[in-house]
Length: 447
Image 1 (cartoon, rainbow, N blue to C red):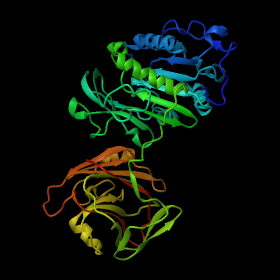
Image 2 (image 1 turned 90 degrees about the horizontal axis):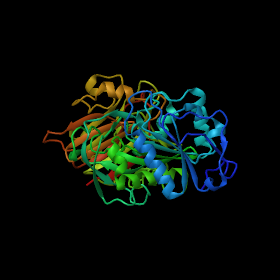
Image 3 (image 1 turned 60 degrees about the vertical axis):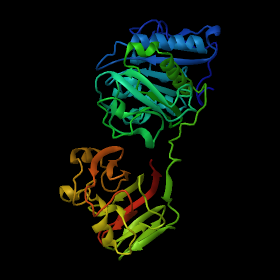
Image 4 (image 1 turned 120 degrees about the vertical axis):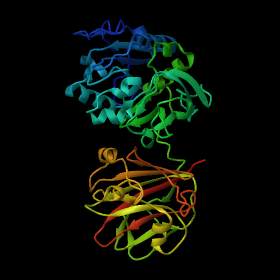
């Protein structure tokens, strides 16, 4: 299936002379005609320019993708010349593979050509260090899904497969044990992409993503298709049958040869506020929340709107919130049913929303008990007037707080008078001078 808005491949499609020969090939000044017998099937460009660390597995990766193409009816060109990123040249490709690229590899004009290519339906495949590339190009960050943060030493780890329908993971069982260099990422791509596989951080040392550690994912991005795998650091990866099939499935998805649902998998979350009704919610104390344009905005107080319909034990709570200025509010969890908002203060925990207060009372803090990682919080926090997203992950008495996919707090309750493991959820209306809005309040039960 060809990408919409791009030229269909045929006898007139052009080939970059010599690009498939080796990683030092340059783009020919005048592309040659592609023979008709080579024009069938999809056409893939492998790009492996590096401006930082260079992986010695790149030649193995190129050779493997070329072999996969020969065996599966797609043609492969390979280059390290960023000059290949022109509108005229890119239009002949169904997908571009960024194979362990590092650093700033494209200039502004080349970046724009690639953005236009993806916007017209082009496919993208990122392999391993593709996440260690173009940190100052927001479009690319969204396309790859997450940037590299760090990695421990090469070691065996257990990969847990979440999606058995995608061609990159359909051949795998529930667990896949293999040896590689396992990346940690700066953010979690789960909210924007369909996670195909995660790392079991208990199976190796050095994971730092708090138990939800995606390692392969896909998404539709603008009009294009994006697939990323964190595997592929080692030369040996490209000789592994399962990894080769994994890589092949990602390429086939990105080119459009195989269809797959890559929408973000929020289906396992249940909305408890969907923007249309406050059914199941109850106001405690003074003030209220105004429902308008899909959002709840605090008015007056000090009170709390709490979800009376059920209690929660082990769960992930996601919600968006926005301050208009220097405003105050919070999210309460783990409190008993009560029409007194102070019951939540005295028997539960408040996750604070107010970036200007003291360390244990600032955004992301467990109010009065534990400050957030302020440096990480400041890096992740969007300014007043913009939406932010909290994920509060409660497992027993253990609470992890994520702000815009960045983990900013890790707290364990030791107070016998309180319990995170059983209680209600609420949002605070702090006072007449504090206007804070909420939307998209979702809950997923955890084991």
